Image (tube, rainbow, N blue to C red; front, side, top):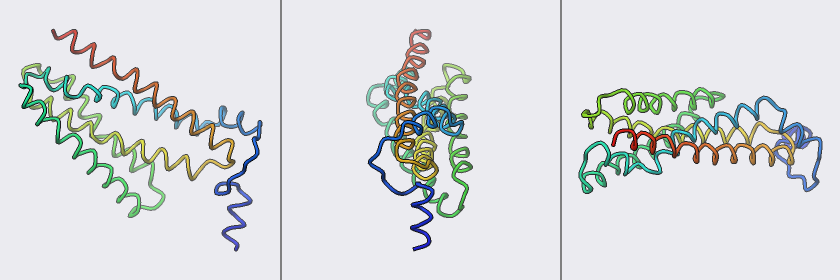
Length: 186
């Protein structure tokens, strides 16, 4: 009863069907929510280019069959990173941001490999693409933070909307960078 009463008082777990205008303003001015939206945007920049993962891998010099085969480990690694991130969060209480930050290290290394290795080093650059598989873990943690750390039903709804919009904008903007790289190489 005490736990339920505490959740009701701080309004983090109860659903309210009333629209509260002040919570909308709170959502747009809360530094935590703005930072989560920015993190969502930056995270989506890397994943936006993965929509064209096959084209990128083919651009490294692989045949169409090799490209299809070399694209398969990316999905497997995304599942592994996501499961490891979820497991780590259960083993390390109150360390969600640490798990999300550590999960972003492989994509950063992958981006450096893709951009800095010589063009004829197709295998090294392919490993860079595979390392981008860690990005969903950071986004997964971010969504968990929104669900558990934002009080007020209206504020939570607007915060989720802001994060989702920034994710979509990041996906759209992220598409153009790999296309620019492909056009500049050819």
